Structures are given as C-alpha cells and as structure tokens.
Image 1 (tube, one colour):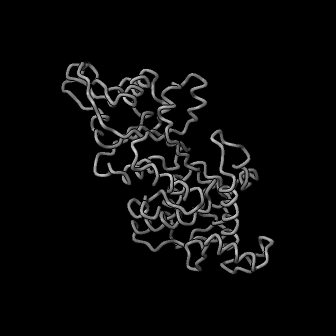
Image 2 (cartoon, rainbow, N blue to C red):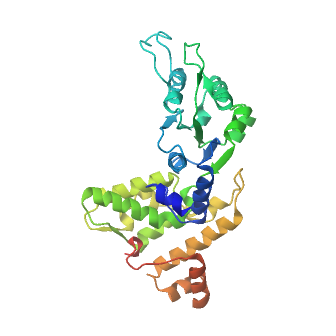
Amino acid sequence: MEQLKDRYYLNKLLGQSTRMKQLYATIDKVANSDSTVLICGESGTGKELVAKAIHYCSNRLDKPFVPVNCGAIPNELLESELFGHEKGAFTGAINTRKGRFELADSGTIMLDEIGELHPTLQVKLLRIIQEREFERVGGTKTLKIDVRILAATNKNLEVATKNGDFREDLFYRLNVIPIFLPPLRERKDDLPVLTEHFMTAFCSKQGKEPLKITPEAVNLMMKYNWPGNVRELETLIERCVILDDTGVVKAENLPERFIQQKPSQLNTTQSLMELPLEGIDLNAILDDIENNFITQALQRAGGVKSKAAGMLGLNRTTFLEKLKKRRIEFKDKDIFGA
C-alpha cells in the first residue's frame, strides 16, 4: 500500500481513515489485473481519481487513460464518440474518426456515469466486454482492441436492473470487482488532511500563507453533512482563501448552510442509520466514529490530552492507550489548531 501511495498519491484521494486505507489496499490488489472494475459512489467523492489510481499503478501506466462521461454526451453522438465512424457514415462525417475505445487501445478507458448509457449502446458495450471487438459507425470491418474497462456510477445499478433500466447481463459483466467510495460524511477523520491539502494548494496559488481555522469553524465543518463531498470541501476552501483578508477562517466566514444547520444535520450518526444495499463493514465504521470523536476532542481541547479525555468520559491512561493504538497524533501547529 505504501508503494502504491508513493507511485500515485492523488491530490484529492487523500486520507488515513479506515475506509480510505481499505480503498488503497483494494486499488493495490486490482491494479495489475485486467478485470473490469465498477466504481460506485456519490457525486464529488472522487471516482475518476480512483480510476486514475488503478491505471497509473498498473502495468498499463505508460499507455492511454481515456475518460468518457456517458451522461454528458447526447445519445445520438455518444455511439460515434465511443466507437468512431467511417467517412460518410452520416451527415457531417467528412473524415474517418477513431472513437474513444480505439484511442484507449492497450490502455484504460473509464466510462463515467455508466448508468446513463442508452439500452442500444448497452448491447454494444456488452459485446466489447465479452469479445474485445467492435465496428465503427457506418463501417463493416471488425476491429480488435486490448483495453482495460473501468466504469463508474452514482446510481444503484442493482436496483436499475430490477427496474428494467439497465441490462442485467451488462451489470454482472461490469461488476467483476466493485469498489465503493465512501462519502465524506462517513470519513470525517480525513477532513483535517483534506483541508490542509486544499488550503496549501490555494494559498500557494494566491501567494498567501496557509490560513488558520478557529475551533468554532472547525466544529461546524465537522458537524456538516457534506452533500457535495470532497468537491464541496475543495470549493469551500477556495472561497475562504480568495475572500480572506485576516489570515483566519472564523465561523461567520462559512456559508449560511454551515451556520444554520438543522438539528438533524448535526447528528453525527444520522448517515449510519440506513443500511446501504451493498452492506457495511461495521468494525470499520465504529473505528471511524471513535477516531472522529477523539480527533474532535483533541481539537477542542487544544491538544491537552487530559482535557480531551474528560470530554469523552475517559481517564487519561485509557485515552493515551487509544491514541497509541490508533496512531493518532495531534500537532499544536496543525492547521486546525488555530
């Protein structure tokens, strides 16, 4: 896993929570296979970054990585975009054009928002997965390709197959190795490292020193549900850096949605109350919850361990044992320690 992170330490795919460590380990295991991977997760969680990690940690890393957003291209254009077309295949086809699959030959193609794929194209994709061959639009010559297929979706494709919106045979072909990317609300232990990363990047771009964040602002950020996930955090930090004129992010500098959160949004266990269809790793989630509260207690106590232990109803010895066991370190100069 450490070798993986040394080879491709993504600028947004950061974190040391249990869920992220499991993700790194999975990427490390699947990278050098040619098996199809289905990456599932909410919008803004970093699905394309996971796909890039798989590609750049594989033996195809020096070959093309070709992403395609199946939901952003009109259906009438997507077939040509994916498979290419021959000259004269349709009005406007003045030249023969290679599609994304040809461009990805010997490398990796990432089919984002695969749940939006039209049923007609689902049939053609199924053939490519099974036979690794296709024809361009308007063509008769069968083309063979060697390509690793990665797919991503924010939809529940299992439910979509039951509703008749997605081909069942295609789903099972794509779902050889499923990877579930956790939303930010389920890995809030990673907020400090993500915040520090984005803060450093945006401050460097603006020629500023990294901003400090007050405990009150940290508290609101830790309680927030983050519906936009890591992407929402990134844009928040960019906004804070651009608008800053004091060097400190205070609670009142955060958007209204942070300040006027409803009680239900402040419930740190709310997101865990509904069991996902794919199931959960209960031990991992309980570990994340404990890490989360320990980190918050240290932040609020300014690094004073006896005070943090008291906030959690623990004696200092037990608290120190937990810190050691979980390898949690608290640095007074941490960006969250303002």
